[in-house]
Image (spheres, rainbow, N blue to C red):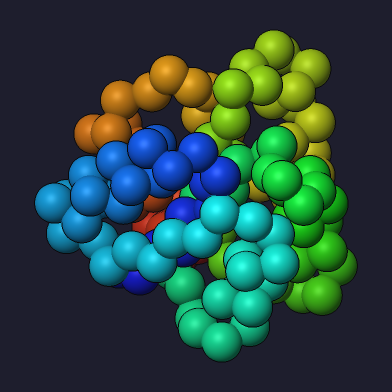
Length: 121
């Protein structure tokens, strides 16, 4: 399963990348929206892990752009914004799942497997 991780915190991004690789995922990781757009254009991903607060913009804007363009790639929002309002907004904006920080890597992997399964019917 190929996953794109979009996370600006270098330590967290590298930890997620390593943890998902150990769980059997093929992981590409970027730290900003510009690179996320390019990666999603150049590659086909089974799922995307997307942070909200990025140095060049807001992850929800990119998610909404992808959805308006017809992308059905499952997206899991992984963010420190964990209030109920934020979770509802994220899910209503097109996210397939929402996981707040801090989180467990095993749970992240399980949630990714679940949203990909749902997407496959």
